[in-house]
Image 1: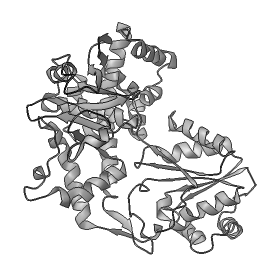
Image 2 (image 1 turned 30 degrees about the horizontal axis):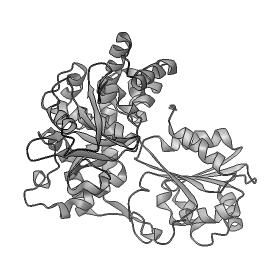
Image 3 (image 1 turned 180 degrees about the horizontal axis):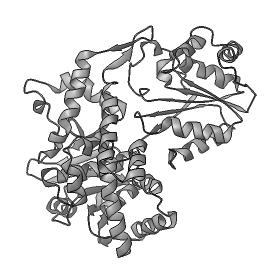
Length: 449
């Protein structure tokens, strides 16, 4: 299935930039987010000659890049095993899929860029894992790659996949920008679509199942299959000879961290506590597992701030954080099956806050915004803190248009919080703005940029 994806625009910008300087386009991202589909489609639409390698499925291809990285030698070897490969200057692109499996192919990027005749697009689902391939040492072509991260579909991409008219999407964008109410019929429609998005998420294969069947049982099955396929990657790396090996202790810790996320978010304060995994465990012991899952693209940390002031990074507390999943549909699949009907029927119980916070965290992640929250021992807690147009805003997430006691305290205490510009309150109500408090429906979170 081929869906409209925002990353396509990044590929177009990169292709135009090749006139200024030759760089390879390197696409990182979680397994099954649609990397291969989109780069193959882009290549087919823009070059007469496309030469594709998947180094996971074609281990023999590694031998091409095992020794001499002279371009003439590489061309000779490629055409000896790929009989349809054609190299024509400025009309040929090479796709190196799962490039993390072949350090020689990664190193050859510099040779191709210096040669200048051919373009390269590379991708890898484990490319972000530090130390995954022991042979990478010294082999990464610094200065010759343009790296972009691809994430699961955001809500707007989900709307495209569902066939929503672009003019209607632009209408709600204008409502957000101008602080005007969304038409009530559209408001109800988008609220329903957003609940579907929470349950389905943004993995293309899952969206495709939902589009074709509308069957939540099949949706969940696809989600669980994807989560199961991720487990095959946990703790995996390549040795110096590029042979797969598993770090079993790391695999066990990754599993333990991932399985604990729903119960961690169900807690009232939602702070990630290693003791909930094992009472004798320490953060130092599990830090490598958490880092692995972040690098893999499955989770992200939301750090606590000592105060919401500039620069936010300077006030984060390294060892106090929450963990959110980078696709709420997969998070829903990790809960009980009843959770889907609870979201659609608007009765979530103890996981209600966790689900809605996760989907907003997910929206911020997909807009490349670092995650922060703010809390004090007094009980004051702000769900998220972010910057918009170089101003600090606090964000509160409410499944209902409830009280915002903590947010109001922050907004009124200018002596303690002089840098906070305003509040964005996400609820199930319509758009409104009173003073420095902007209320928007949950489904407009994708516009917080």
